[in-house]
Amino acid sequence: MFVRKPAVADMFYPADLGELKRYLDAVMQPSDKKISPKSIIVPHAGYVYSGDVAAKVYSSIEPFDVYLIMGPNHTGLGAEISVFDGMYEMPFGTVKSNSRLVALLSENEYAEIDYYAHLQEHSIEVQLPFIDYITPHEYEVATVVVGTHNVAKLYSFAETVAKAISSLDKRVLIVVSSDMNHYEDQNTTAEKDRKAIDAIEKLDENELFRVCSSYGITMCGVAPAYVAIAASKMLGAKKAELLMYKTSGDVNGDYSKVVGYAGIVIE
Image (cartoon, one colour):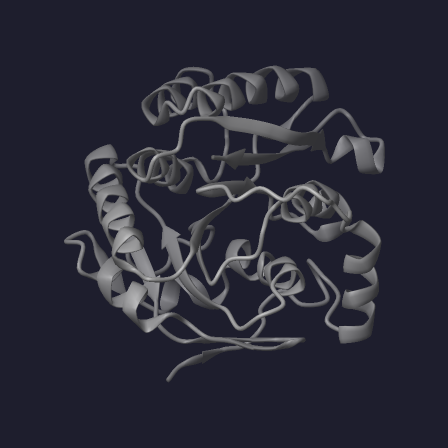
């Protein structure tokens, strides 16, 4: 079985296990009331920028048995819908793929088992420390890099996702790894991101695509978000809620060219 080595440890998150645990201990917020969403949308920048937004969401949810993590394709390599069937080597240990879910996802006509899209892709890797932190029992993942914006292909894959999750006898959470608008000033980014977040809160995947296209909103994970919203509705989701929003400017003080980060739960 292919073992994927960490690609962004010590760049996006601490590679030292002790340092990583201290960071997670500091940002994760204990909560007495945990929710069990169908899917979540969390950012994937370096932890110094977006880690507290991701932590807000992960702190609010119950642990699951399987995490279906979908991210965008930042490298341009590999298949349009790239399903990984190997293992992730991480500072805290090895993360295994759920072979049944991987097999079901790869049956979709637009998806295929592929390694190239995953080798240097950071969006999925940075979610794994949070997932490991909140899950006290054994868990598995299925990871998908989505590199197409063809809505027919995305909707077809959403149907496959919903059917696959329904057929498993384990609790599955869909995790969408996405940042929001990129490299415009604070006010412009906040205004654009509000339009995208409104569409997500309406559970309207087509509206999300429309506003991102019409207003030039550079939400990198709009395609996996489309899949997650559509699949979550098929699985019974009725609402979405923004838990936290901030920008890189809130961290570094440079509001002239920021990236937006949103933490959203879909229940």
